[in-house]
Length: 400
Image 1 (cartoon, rainbow, N blue to C red):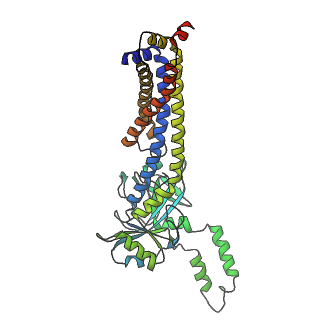
Image 2 (cartoon, rainbow, N blue to C red):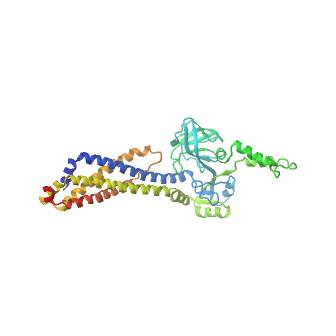
């Protein structure tokens, strides 16, 4: 039985091999798409891990800085720090923007980190080169996926920064590399209006008699100063003392501080259950389409091979070969085609994954699931050819 399938494969090895390679490339794309989804989920979890926070405090009625815009006063951390069970608090801003450099620009998530050191929530936890930010202005630490080099000058909005450190696997939930800068610079980049807007706002304020009172000196200057200041952040990152109940603390913040607070589990649900859910559905539909196409290819090539050897199958029937043996021969050919395709696909996916702009995570579990799925698809696709072979009338086939 095995020798029959093997000899038939060797007889048409060229067609069989090239079909297996084509099928393998299709399987490779399927594995890559599954890896892209796994990478998105992993990026979301790494984003939360790298923040170092147990609780995220954000604007009321928002889902937090990773899902939608959030703006809270930059002194809100003071009241949060006095609550029981709180270990550290730190302001943070997130801004996705184009970071310009001499060679062009790079889409990145700019993170404004509060003054502190390694271990302060929001800070990059480790570096692969250079040093951490030590000055209050115009220094940056960048993820190596940005392509920036130590000492390189970059521009964020209207200010220029020197890259003093490099890190890795510091990316947003959408895969954009992170660039860390001092908090004050980040507040200016995100919240401060440009010069023309500031001048226009000052003119409107000067024209307002409520602010421009001759009998109240200094009022106009105070109002204008408040309009051009940066006193907002996107979130407060909170770490807790060991043994502190995160859910109870988050509920206390919501109740008494009139802000939203999310625990690690809640933020993970927002990132994966809401932000990545749409992408997962799209990838799922794509995988279904690829599975259907793969089944059609296998069914077509096995059907073609079966049609090419109708006379040989008729001879096998005449000499007493059982239908089961003929069916197993055809199914083994289909499974062999699937095996060749899967090996080619797994190898191509392994070499292609590092070239993708997004992180591709190829997990052994997905590889095993993919192998089982390919074998099942090939087995089912061979049924059409098996049905054709079993219906062959030896007398008609040989006589024709």
